[in-house]
Length: 233
Length: 132
Image (cartoon, rainbow over all chains, first blue to last red; front, side):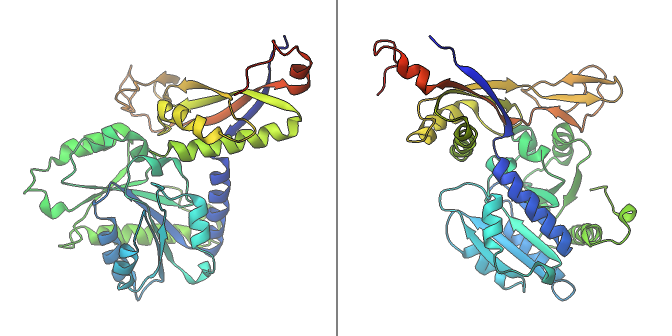
């Protein structure tokens, strides 16, 4: 009996997604738009932070938001009041955004007319970690009510993030939030990750978040001298 | 639970890799799966059979090789294996933080195991694999 032969393939299972994401990243870089994605569990406050962020940036910057949910356009309607251009991505039963969904949602958009583009992923700490969306920076949000060991339970998503944001910090005392425990958990799964604390309700920490965004934007602008590019984030 | 999406991508990749090989039957897919890939092996195996139904690789086996997490320790100047249960990115020997992973994120289709269909057809009916 003839034995099977081995044919080497050696390719990433998500190669298609990675190729689309790479093309998107190149378009974003050429247009000089700063692209930031937000991931978290459901209810951590992604939409609320984005509402406040888009409102604060409006006037100075042109902001676009793609917001992913399994169903409804409620988040898009909430965000429309902020002055940003908003597009809902309804994923149906799919629990994450992928690069093709982003590409399709951006059809007809003039990226040159944007300074910031935010990608709000579906609330989920597992699946979005596998999909590159072409973003320059991935922010993972954890609210103080969720438990300080969350990074240890979901190491993959935290390990692929560039910035960790602790939200609802105004509730910290009420829920007995242990800041040091969460900091240690971040360090365990993503040593050196930048950590921000915010409260969208009281505005605490929003200045630091906004200046972080300004810094990211400065490094994503088309730069004449390549050696001046900031590679630190 | 995004393993079905991953399985569909995997089947698509395998079908594309098999197409230029001509008249072959794909017996198995060899896949490397990192402990930090975010994919659950059992869920992927379950989804794979569903995703492959009706495609050119229907009935193929899925051989998954687990890839443990390793990172380079700049202080020890060597690659260190990390405890998959805790995922603490610290050198198990000297305690240095290890931000740079070497392995553990893999989600890779490494190879196909194929049989030439013509050869299979030349065999007697009793030697042929049972078709459903």
